[in-house]
Length: 268
Image (cartoon, rainbow, N blue to C red; front, top):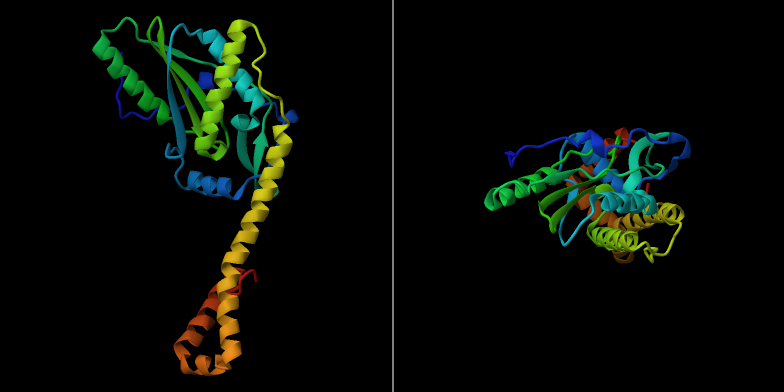
């Protein structure tokens, strides 16, 4: 196997669910952060800059079939891993799909010389990290494995930043490990069930409200402080007449904002 280290490859079709079960979809507003990611996604389609790759070396015997089952259970447990995005009624929304089976293609490099094996493994890791992800079509969670020896694998998981962050990566690995270990022992994984659809919906709405309040507070306070200082000193009119340039700038800003349906005033 000879793999170009700089080649960008699309997500393999085997990594995509055959169909999204639209009848069971759950739709809720996207967060402000996800809206920013969507803007970047539309400006730079096919970019892999928002990918969050994980390369996890697993020493010992690894069952690809059991690992795939554990990944499928992981996606069932965390609906963010089966989320896509679309504009619904003029608003960017998260669309949480029904659980789907997660494939785990395995690249077997055991037949190769040791040096070539590691070189190709590094190339596969780079390829996996650069897989373009479509926020509208999904999936935003793709897995792959590389087998270097009978007792050594590298598990590769790539997640789009719109549905995951650095802290969440640790949760993904923790839960996968617990689920895999439970399946191998024929025991429950010992992870508590939770209604994350409800909590995530509340988190989404709450984050939007916190963001709105934060912007208001951040934008309004400097204006309040400045105006109160002028009013208390009785120099507001004098300052305005003395600084004609500022008045002209304000008029220009007011006209510019009016054309865009907004206001110079904070929250106006």
